[in-house]
Length: 269
Image (cartoon, one colour):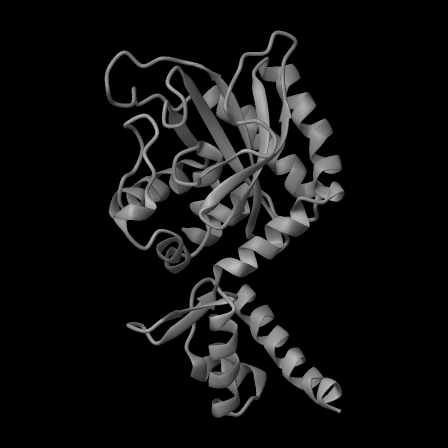
């Protein structure tokens, strides 16, 4: 009997997650209760249980709730299956035919970017971004291309302190305000740029892949040799390479039934 009696609670919990997934940012418990027609006490109980499991993030200062890291992990696990990779592989191959540089497909896995595919030109060069490699999401362009399009509260949950920021080469954001400024700039531009943040002597441009709701579900990046002579970024944005990369990301978004990057950027403006 207990198993059958748990089903309504499970359905309500899933309804809460679906509702939060449709919101642009965290919402109050009262809003969740009102939209789902649930008693307020039931809503608080569901949100508490989901937060304990990592599927919901509670922002006590704002008295609001948003999706938790566990939901990103589930989404990433789904995307790691063959459908995404099979759809993406020919897109990446066409991309390297145009650019003659290495192309990657990555997904967010918590505060990391996980690389699912790597396609290389005829004369490849070695990079650390191989299939199965995970990197701190704030450093590679592919990670920031996705972070730029998730709610600010989610970014804060992923990077709650300075200890959350890993340094590989002395470049890249080292605290949340710097990351937020960089994400805002890259969201306005339409693509992310990484200049030696992951490996000295290499740079990347990346664009997000979106689902039907305008949420980033993956990112496509182009990586190429580049060495900036000084200790800081050169300030290059490589718009020509970015145009090819964005076109590939838009193609994969379409193949997945998602929205194109232009309509998503308009929704954020």
